[in-house]
Image 1 (cartoon, one colour):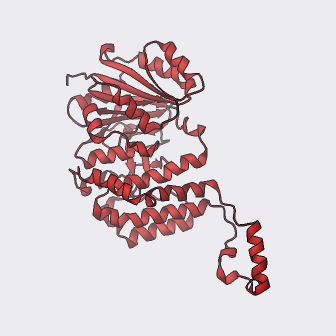
Image 2 (cartoon, helix red, strand yellow):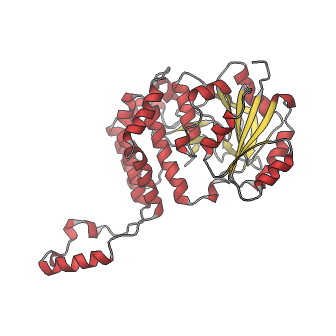
Image 3 (tube, one colour):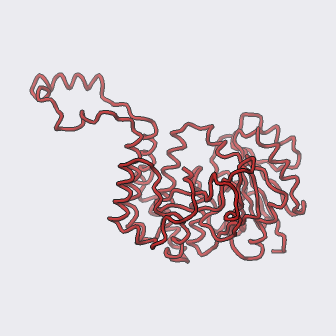
Length: 395
């Protein structure tokens, strides 16, 4: 590569018409030589007039999908459509960038310092941090470092990061293709955590570049979807990422905790107020004689279900997406592990806050601490766990 590589900026759009003009305006002000970059917009079946705005811009290469194929597949589609780019830059549609953004985020890759980078993401008004690099807890829940903090010197230190946020990342095009890109079975959410973790396993390096500054409308697309649909992905995909990327020894150690904590979260949100009908010690003796049994059967024919909140059903479906397709995910895991070039001991150092407990609920915290101790998960991360920068779950 030359000092300034050829770059394809890939932006995914789904009913994001209100963001596009500002996004295009900021990209048009980049200080990067215009002949060295192009903008590829992948539209996932928008019906809000987005296509008209994109076409009116006149300089945007548009790829149209009839339906929403997801963030992962859409980004992969955009990447595959570019033949001559040295670097791919993925950017959210609800983002605006500083003029130097593209230069800063691509140069470390061009210099051979790393395979992928992520920038400093600020809130739209620039008063808060959205992301200053990525981290994770031991069961796969991604963390945006510095989220909601006031920008300070601590956010201006470049360095390694577990993953590059998919909303503001750059990656060497050949590495992206060789690694398989974003996992399309994730559809959306945590595909960037999974890719970053996979890159480290394969022997590559990902870096945080604070000089690459952008501004973000946080979660503007997420709000368009039902809560339970988003929750299913946000519970399932961390589990799948762990299942694919941990080595054999560490997966055997952490898998019981991954599943146990997911089931406990489902129970917390289930909305089941009365468990007594399910407890044998509370069965009325009058319901066990002949007449009582007949009455019970009649009652069950009329009412054979109990109300459970949609979020809990989403959690159970999320867990079953792994357990119900075991052979498939074992094969997917084998594909990643066959390309391992770096031991887990080196990757785990990048987790940042591995023992972070995601639920502020007494019984969940009790289970979390108990599983960590019983399974020896705390011993994987040494004595410095839990001492990273203040952070927030992405899910």
